[in-house]
Length: 357
Image (tube, rainbow, N blue to C red):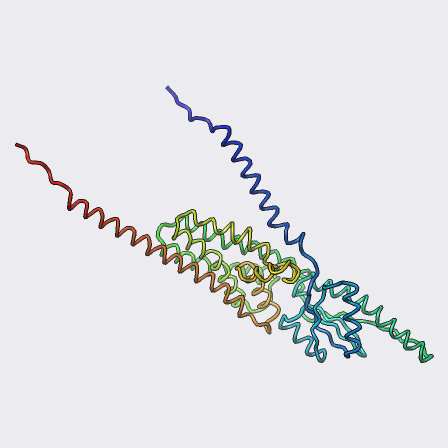
């Protein structure tokens, strides 16, 4: 006689369906929120101009785009270029005999395009000032031209920066896949930790080889780029392994929740940190997706920038995850030891067999 498994109760069917729909809503909200709430605000831009002209330009920019730019004074063009190369600013406005707008497309296409359009309005403003001065002097007005110079351009293989930006999401997935897969595939904390270290190192060198050696979208030193990717994979995978060792396999949920739903949307991999509502842009840099995106861009295009902060953030997450794994190991070992002692004590005090009479 064949038996069939009981059908799932209808209330549970409805609950599961609604729960999955809610999950889809959360995913859509998480990944759409940065784009919807993003706006041009407080973009650091260097300004090389006499004080009187600087005040006029600042007033004109505030009137045209209130709060869009945060102007940083620079003494000359060389200092402005240095500020760009160290990632202190996204670009520069140089006013003088040869007015110029300096951009850095490698710092992000959004900021670069914004500064490029700024050159048009700047040229119109300077031309109006030159016309007024020439009319007062009764001489022909000179033609003012504002040049646009990309001081840190993207590589020819990735002229829009799409390849470098697109690599940030697989980086998050790669770290999660490593942590989750190793947790379910391997038994033993030390084996998971050892496998994670091997995986992170190999995956980092493979990712850099694909992006730099194959597609050519990643310039810079290959070894440094590979180590940065390796540390990023470890920074995402290690906390997953650590929490799973500490609380059980349910701990793998930290990956999708923390790194995918929360940290990835605020990583600023495709837009300036300043464009996100405060303080989310800054918070995103304290998590592996944001720190990794910043570090890879710094190493590839801005070697003069101070990259200590993203290195330390990634290292902190990686070491923290490994410490959680070790803690979970000793907690499990302690629990097993206590269980064995209790079993032994129970056996010792158990009544012996009753002799037959």
